Length: 372
Image (cartoon, rainbow, N blue to C red; front, top):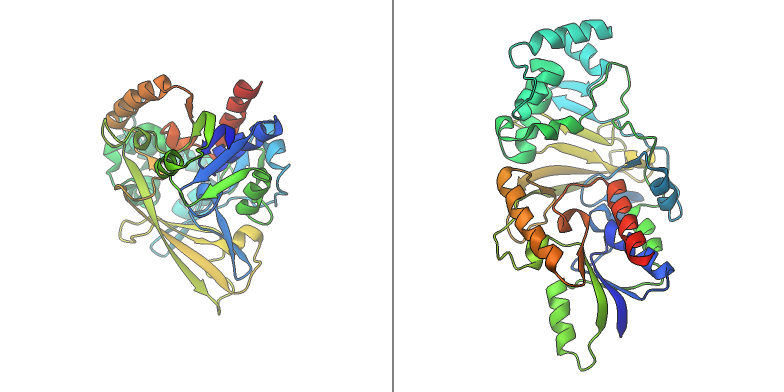
């Protein structure tokens, strides 16, 4: 069979590009090493509950073009992400806002909160923070850093806050209003019916082969009496894996998920996500999936998330953006740019953490460039 595109990876980037290419009259083959589509946003219905099998994913964006595009494949509910942080027996609202400050210090006005933060950050304030600890204290003071950031971050990244770059904490909103909406984006929600159903619609009519890696596919194809041919390859796997790790391994953080079904419990924690911020609790958060759809389902399903250091064979989730990996990725990018008729995309292909809307936006941008 002759294909215009071989697309490696049936996640959001691959599915978005495949859809645009197919709509433009191109013939596509999509492959994925997993036995399912949708990548890390894969959801599976269990006991009437759509379980996020690779951690919680809440779609949010301020890009109307992207929002309109995803709404052609799914109707989204009005879920608003309002996580809770648990430190011992203390519960705090996230993101850091007046509800957090009021609970932490027993105050009621923005002026009082700002005064306390200003006092606490005096000793640790840096105009140009050199690491995550300095950045966090400069933003919210020592109390919140010690209770809600330090232990959680140490578990999440497996490194001390003083060893992590300052920019990581800049993604966390800080606001002096009583607003528990984690995101500032205009659009937000969960696709009704789950993410897998959404990606199924994106891949409708496109040839998809699951449970086969890129290397295995190439070997099987080369051994075939009538091998498939492709004009171009869209590769969304790890860029260092594509090149056989010949320059060394890029580093990632991985996750282990511990799922539990509670048939006799209707509501375990009262919220979709509760972060456990103290260092003595081994997991970073518990997800209670039914709350993404406002309590639907029989019993409840929870998932504990345990971050871990990545090793070959594990699923890579978060790139470790330190000097060593930035330099190494730069070398792999030079190889990738020189690779003829292969385009690298998605978070693994470009070694970059992407929110879902940014993944789709980058795939749409590539499709526009490729397809006109």
